[in-house]
Image (tube, rainbow, N blue to C red; front, side, top):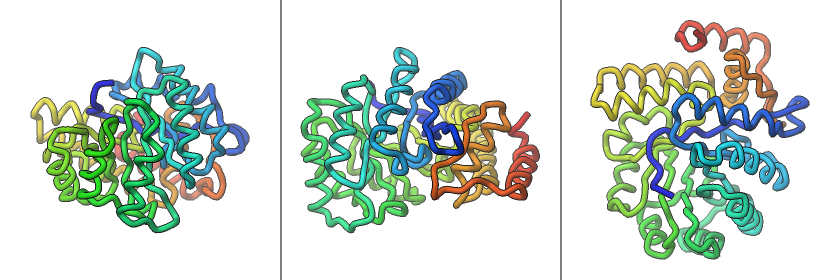
Length: 297
């Protein structure tokens, strides 16, 4: 697999029965929608995809649906990180079996880990994959654990199949630090929608965006404007992304994305508890904000 770059859309997971069941046909439709908009790759079952809220069996079925739908069309990266090393290894093996193009593994969460623990975790959970591409996923705000750039450097030396890292820290200086450590050996990918343009400007090879699951055209246009050297247009689109982030909300972002997709004619159901649905006031405000931003035309 070639190194990831460009627009990597982190998909929501379509649901049936008010969030009680994964909608596998809906996953296929969503993959086609995003591929048709020009994204470069798909990431499934990450934070936006409610991965940690699904059972292992559900995660396997959803991953398989996306991989089979996109065969020969777009690379699919499956998020396999879990609360235990055993779960992660099981999902890793499944991703390889179904023909995924790569895996992304979030840092262990809830329990605090030191540097040695993180090195041991990643080398042991991903050591039996025989060259299969692995992307680390650093999101300290969600996991409570932080992969320091120096530890990332140690993992580059110890993991021949390490393909890159996704960084969701909200700090562009950290992107630069990881780039300095990587020295072009592996990909450094931004995971914060607020920092897409700054991260590309300092050398990130691409970005993972959850919001692009509902508005892929906006993010594809932003990346194309940057690569074409049209920085004025890229700045305008980054500013629009910032307004969109505010409209979606922080706590309700995943639910808001599902509502936005429904407003765009692609209903994808509800969310898995304890995530909640928007109330009528929130739903009305979201629709009004999206119309004002010109994103429902």
